[in-house]
Length: 80
Image 1 (tube, rainbow, N blue to C red):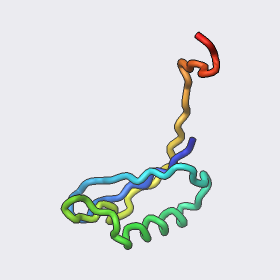
Image 2 (image 1 turned 60 degrees about the vertical axis):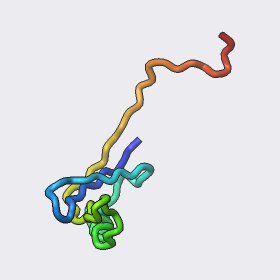
Image 3 (image 1 turned 90 degrees about the vertical axis):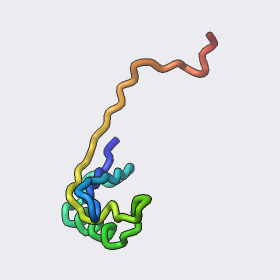
């Protein structure tokens, strides 16, 4: 499954916070992603317990592809 990982810098500290979205289109245009990240930053609705905006400045975006490799799975319908 592909996830979209959006990286933002906080408003006052030099820390990076990530917003990961599942079930996204995997061929979004860079400009579309940047515009959406700018809109999220402008809203200022995400803050830590001190009221600091944690998604203040967009700094990165990437697709993360995770592959699940099942090592063991017990069949629930099977009688033991």
